[in-house]
Image (cartoon, rainbow, N blue to C red):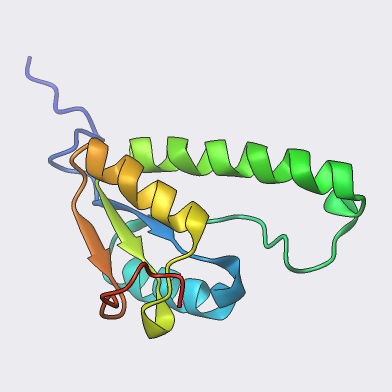
Length: 123
């Protein structure tokens, strides 16, 4: 008997990972909304370290947490079929740049919400 796996990559929705600075938390949420409405599975940053929270209240914790989250996001890129960079005003920060380079190295398609500026992207 022929069994179709319920989540073969052909039948499951496309997985998109959002990359971008958490300074654009609202824009990341908006991109999540639109991508979800378009029927895609969305992987996104789950913590905004720019907002105070007990989990990263002290500086040492915050540094450790930042490293963990950075690595976690690379694993999200591993899972994703494509990358959507949320870059209002063309801004791409250092960690987002690293994520884009990583996605490129894996041959993942990359989309941008805004035109990419011609400079080094530090805006």
